[in-house]
Length: 515
Image: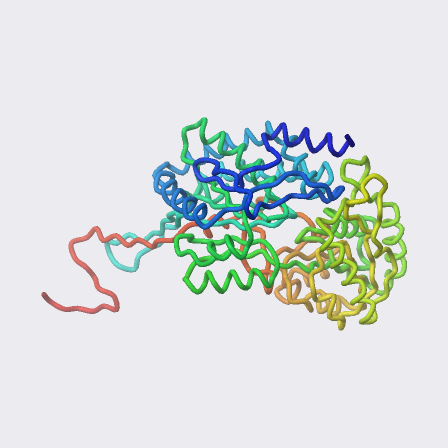
């Protein structure tokens, strides 16, 4: 038995996973159904980890009915008490962090630090949500009418659905789920079919806490294809909000269906993120930020740096040092010491990587580093590539698309106005960065005419975001916000309240009549 087999078996055993697992949870785990079961393969070596059954239409209906029932109980628990329950969930995640992080590494190929960081982010969001449970504030306004009080209050909206992606198989769910939970909502989770086991393990851990506390099972699970489960969620009027992370085409379809029934969406779609590197920057800092941004999670982050726009006077030096930095980065299985770039998620991702490089070359782009498939002894079934650097121009069509792989397009600029134009020339608008110590350049970048993204960074990478700030983008990225700041309002309904405590009823527009 190989080391990877030992690792797989140890992870499954510690988390109570079997070779065949139910992919449906309401207030109990539904029976495993072999029909349409989803098989999870590790991108590390291409081997089967385990299987999970998909939800049937009957399973879906049971889960929806349970979520509605649980909501009616949950919303009557005071928000600070809901926060205390989320606190206990966060504490249990702390205890199970190592095991869950190892599963993330096994199932989606993240390095050990990134796998552990994924679970730490869930813990951080739980802590944030505990505090939030005592801060669901409304405003009090001054009424223009005598002896009237005018204020707003917020109420939960009911069951919501979170459709998550493979690249952050648990943390992005928690951005939505824990915040929504303290507001009073229940949550139905449809994870990516490429990462079903992480979702099952997380629900096993959390449902155990809720059982122990005799709290309602507010988190449900539905594993299954988008054409079956996803469509039902999008069209179901009982689901008040759908939070979707994924591709622009799928997000557009979901948005249209949910809007057609006047439901709400939070969309986190494509990110085609750029970093501007000025000749007034600290080049060491800029290189570190760009290399991490482009290579972390093998370029499979929605915030990955996909374009770098470098001032002409430092272009040659920067690209030379960039190639040297890429050549020193260790690529391989994530359990190998010192590895920064692990595998892509599957063979389809590798093919997309190669196709994008060929398209770039056909449009006049110049491949100046990498771009090959890499075979690693002992891991021949894994999906490894040499990250690519391509000299590009803003006229190329391929640079306007998001390729979920480690491809970095490099552009030249002379004036900052040109850099911002190149930066904003793509249809996506998630994360952005500038590296400069010039105050005027910073302010140009942060002005209304500067970066058109939802996230703007100065002297730090496009990749990654703190959970205290609202996360999301503009343009074709979708426009939704998750996690921090006041994003909790997305999961609640606002009600403006007017109270007349006088003996008369002044009417709007000063209308007067007698009865």
